[in-house]
Amino acid sequence: MAVGHPAAVGGMRFGDHFFLAYDNGAERYAVLAAYLRAGLRAGHALVHLADGESAEAVRDRLRALFAADAPDLLAAVNDGRVAVPEAAGRPAAEVIASAAGPDRSAGVRVSVEASPSSRGWPGSAGFAAFEDAVGRAVAAAGDAMALCQFDRQWFGAGRLDALEACHGGRAGADAVFDDGVLRIDPLFAPPGLRLSGSIDESTLPGLLAALRGLDDRAAHVCLDLAGVEFCDLAGLRALVGVNEWSIVPDRLVVLRSAPRCVEMMMRASGWEGAPGIVHEGVR
Image (cartoon, rainbow, N blue to C red):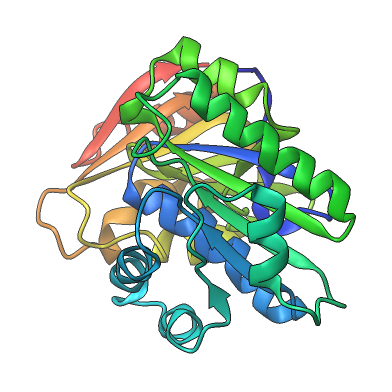
């Protein structure tokens, strides 16, 4: 895959045709939900494309995806604000235009499922042709954007690279916290957080909120500290105490690529051998 940080999906603009390669359902849900919610707030026409399947089958899959904890998106699927057109055999531009309807003054937001059902085996020419058609339709519309979703389990790395080349960029989940001093991004495989910047008195509330927001049912979580430039004692206490909010006994917390200053503080404070904390590499 290309090197570089994915663009936050919430910041997508008209003309963007972005690529999401997701590792699991949690990652797909987080990115797609943020994308659709941004469209609902902006009043965009929402179109979900998945050719090769009946529209009702696709709606059922979206309902199942949003049923647990996204009542707003479930309602939008049920009442048609998320349009799911029959797309098989129809040009992408025609499908997008017809599903968006005549009143599209606020713009159109398209989400695309990269299903292999009607395009051959993943990575075949049919995929690239379909993605090129979506890209042309978005560019021609002028008031549209598209997010195309690919399950990594279906594709080899070389195939994903080729498909990414059909898009204008990569999309990722929005940051959990970002105040310009500390940025916290979600991780999905394994679940956890990626921290970049400084952990100090000013950013501690954001860190604590992000740690409390982790799935308290996960058997283990990863805190990637490769981008941390500074961490004070209160921040370190929060990191090693993350299991205080877990309902899973003996959950493991992996501290990945911690800077040497953090490792030195952990040794000096006696937290190096804290229960449930696993060290994975030092930066």
